[in-house]
Length: 271
Image 1 (cartoon, helix red, strand yellow):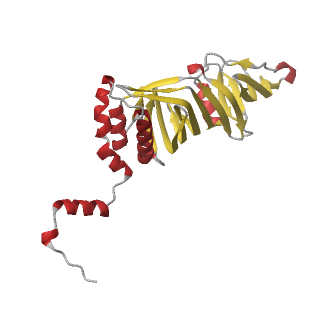
Image 2 (spheres, helix red, strand yellow):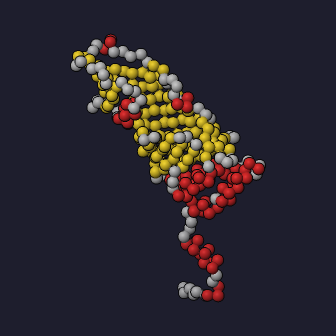
Image 3 (tube, rainbow, N blue to C red):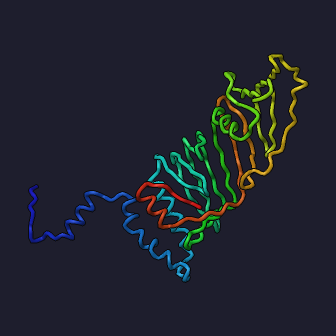
């Protein structure tokens, strides 16, 4: 069937509408186009123009905006003073009664330059308090992750001056004392903040030491950052699988900066 173009029926507005239907905007572009409806009034939130739905709107728009922009890609963030670079795999938000619960799955994570293979973070009791800046509170964070034994040994080398740690071909940690002629093959695990070290073999001046002389009592981990609790950590081949719990965490962010970061694909900042 033939179709004809009638110049009299054409108008710029109809052309724009036709173009929009031909090139259907992505969710992110639609979000950017309407975002001033809630970003610009942020400065007036202190005047009491906040509805009960505002936290829901913020949580939904922010989570969907971040996932739409960074899902499957590398995301950079400054989180409570720490640099984070990772590939964002999952970001989910659901309401749990009066608060929210979020689930974030990251891979190939670098936390202050320390590599972590994978990390799943579930935040419980999340509350968002609109304002300038916007505040976020969580009642608890559950973190499940994996790190290579080599990466863990490298990090431990920066935390203590006496031993040099490396990965033995058996998968165990090889520990060499920097001043004494002591060498040991060790394994370890953590349960509820208690560290247990299993010394499989130890040598002094090349002489193998009897096992009864190299037993190490378990030790309680104290003064961990942010009152963290290491629920469990154990070696599994060349990986260490861990679970960490953090109590209440409070952070803030600039809503306009977050919006700009999502649009431009730059660093997200939570302070």
